[in-house]
Amino acid sequence: MSNTPNSSTDIDHANVMVPTNQRRSFVNMLFLMLGFTFCSSSMMVGARLGNGFDLWGFIAVILTGGLLLSAYTGFLGYIGSRTGLSLDLLCQRAFGRVGSYLPSTIIVITQIGWFGVALGLFSAPTAEVLEVDPWWVVIIGGILMTASSYYGIKGLVIISVISVPLVVLLGCYSITTATIDGGGLAAVFARNSGTISFMMGIDLVIASFVSGGITTPNFTRYSGTPRAGVIVTVIAFLLGNSLMFIFGAVGGAFTGKNDIFYVMIAQGLIIPALFVLGTNTWTTNDNTLYSCGLGLSNLSRRNPRPLILIAGAIGTAASLWLRDNFVNWLIFLSAILPPMGMMLVLDYFIHPKRYLAKVRPYRGVFIGPVVSVAAGVVAGTFLKGHGISAINAMVVSAIVYLVWSLIAKLRK
Image 1 (cartoon, rainbow, N blue to C red):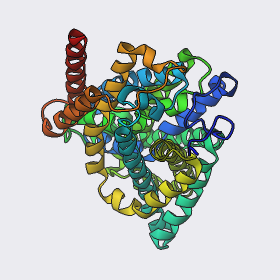
Image 2: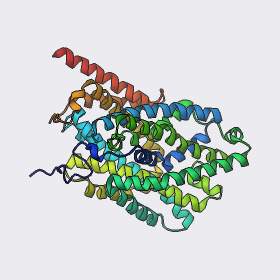
Image 3: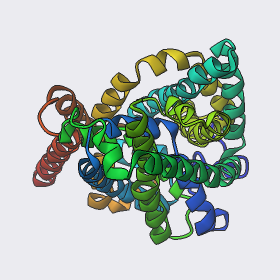
Image 4: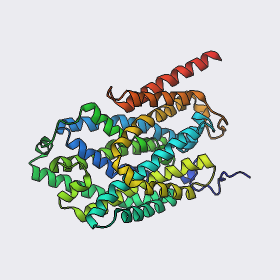
């Protein structure tokens, strides 16, 4: 007997296309995607950027990085909404059923890691303020975030609808206070600037959410139309994620602190910071665990919900270690994930028939995509200091895949 959930029991559509009667409204999808990109770790990156650039340099960095990131995720959002397939099911078409185990494994590892990073970034300073052992905050937070992921897309939407308005209100209050007290935005950014290069700034912007970006199809497959899927994705990654950078940067430049939690404490926002940053982290982490469940389902051919509990336990246990290695984790994600997403986009447009619902995925491994992703990872890893590592990885992966596809076509 197969362990694959059938369409009647697979309520998260881990192994089937999302049917049209299960698609969600534009407003629901917008809150879901904004809740996903409203992340305290992006605010932390913003605080570092605020201490590394003047006002116009900061604006140039987040616009350039945001446009690149939203273009990348916009294509993935389109594919997810057009096909109704999750990232792992798309990878079955691109890599082959057995070949998809590689990207699913990478996604599971990175998403569990991102869950741990975000949980640790919130838990350690929260414990310091409350004067309790940080493991109490880690355990309680991990349980709550895992629980909402367990209930699938409905749980994700509910948490996002609650969190998004609160984050906007707190962030607007924070930057308004800093701007007034600091004598204007230009004066605030002039306090601490010039310590980060332009290329490094773009790299940080892209790396801040490239891990989440590649999982975009897991959510946009619920969009009513491909157009709606693209629009909510671009709004979330260009405007929503940039808003997190702005919130972090203004407060960071004003206080001279790189950790957004301590920025808000310095502004006298202790209680609001505890509550809103907690829900902010929650909305991102339940999305990451949801993607983990889908990836583990592809690897094990089992229902994703019990697997979400396992992923949550692992991420919770490793959270404080991951927090202490935050920057290194971003650099790692920047190298390994972009070429995978780039290859998936190219494969969809080169071999569109593979992605039709009636077509069964190839049971083996497509070698070309595997080789192209490996080449991209190598380029992203060893070309550090030469341009933007994420872009380097995507360009090399695209070139290798296109050459491989051309050779394969000529051999026929």
